[in-house]
Image 1: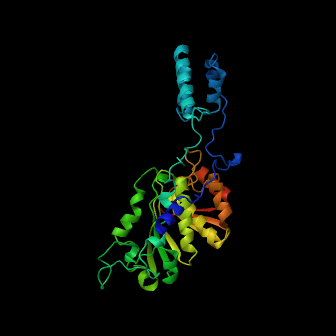
Image 2 (image 1 turned 45 degrees about the horizontal axis):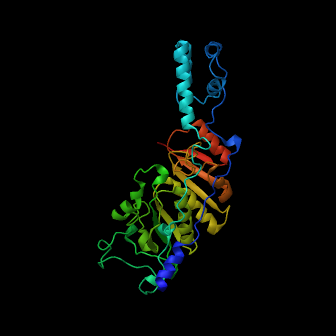
Image 3 (image 1 turned 180 degrees about the horizontal axis):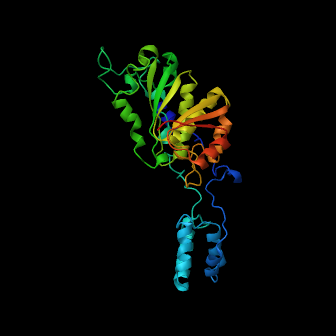
Length: 350
């Protein structure tokens, strides 16, 4: 009964909520917002008689997402009046479907908070439910001469389940899986931790340093962090809690994803433990991850965008902020955004 009561208390616990709605985006930070244009005289003349609000869509360049500007102008110049009216009407109708409309579209996707299991996905099993044991890492290998048998773990390492295990084992490095997949649109990132365990990733001699990390460090597999694959926002909040749990013991957390939305909770957790302004990031990526104006606020391509989670780079990192090492061509607009954030961008050889 005590175990059941403890489990019920955990499930009913308060969840960590991300800001909703997200913080407003400063006007100067809006990238990709179309800039108004002056219509050529012959195009403006052909649009005489078209409803002003539909002409405004063209002038404001909001039609650019459906048809390229020059192609649109060519169509306007060559179409007969009746056909042109139908053409512009169809673009306006498409725009009305795509844009958010108050009263038609839901602002948020609610959870069914009546469910007794609303937080069960991240509720930890109370220790009272487990067989009694001494705190510390547990070796799941079957054989003395190495960890080739038994259960697959990161680096063939022992497993740890609690902060007490990390402390008792004087663990240096805790490798934890975070199989988040929704932030990248379900591209099979969910299988990252499983694949790395099965291939023995992070174990053995390093060919450059000729050091076996497992011989020099106390390394453990800390299992996988629970993920709500229907909500990136709920998932990253719990990832932050779990990475913080590891770091608070003095162990270094290594997080195996999962998609790139994980950078925010990982860095935020480090800042929770070491203090805001005391964390720097070296970010190896082929993209800048400052994507804007997307439908979802937290994705693998927008985690450095200032409007996401309250402009986190400036709030959490050291004055040097991020150093981004990139392997693809530097796009001028993204490079400008990186400089605006105060970060450094380095183009690495492809």
